Each structure stands twice: as C-alpha cells, then as structure tokens.
Figure 1 (cartoon, rainbow, N blue to C red):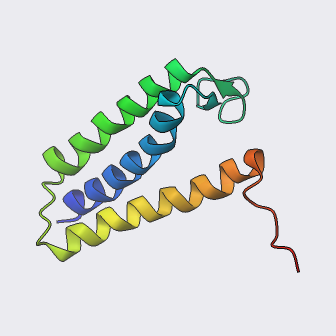
Figure 2 (figure 1 turned 60 degrees about the vertical axis):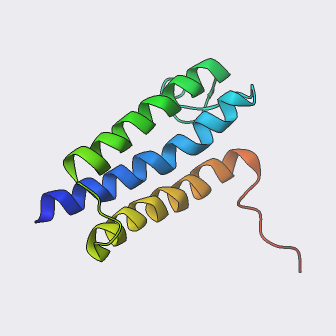
Length: 108
C-alpha cells in the first residue's frame, strides 16, 4: 500500500517541477536546471528547460498513472499527489526566490 502512495507523492513533485521549466523554456527565457554551472543556480537555455520540463512530465506521468494508478476518487492517492505538488512548489518558491526576488520581505 505504501509504494503506490509514495509513487503518487513523487509523481506530483515531478509534475510540479515541470511547470516552471517548461513554461520558461516555451517563453524563450533561461532558467535554473541541474545541468547549469553551478547546478541548480546557473541558468540553462530555453531549449534545455523545455527538454528538462518534458522529462519531468514523463517521469511524473509514469509515477502517477502507471506505478501509482492515481484514481481521483481515492482520497489517499489524491492527498499523496497533492502533498507532492505542494512540497515541490514550496521548495521551488524558496529556492528560486533567492535568484528572482521572490523571498523579499513585504514592506511595512
């Protein structure tokens, strides 16, 4: 029972990670990838981001739909998937916010 839920969690994380890379690449903007120098901090080309985003989509699909067999009526699977999406979204907001000004405190 734990493997399908873990698969849904990580599938959600991969699908959430695909969004900024794929969107930045489609807009022709460079963005951080694991292939940049330094990894995760330097910028990669828009083409690399489209390819990296697409790889994340494929991995997320396999983990969610083939290994995890996500059923939208199964609240445990949906919760695991949502937790993976949320965890990756929060990590990305903190990590990429350092480079794009997203972690600035609100003005008083």
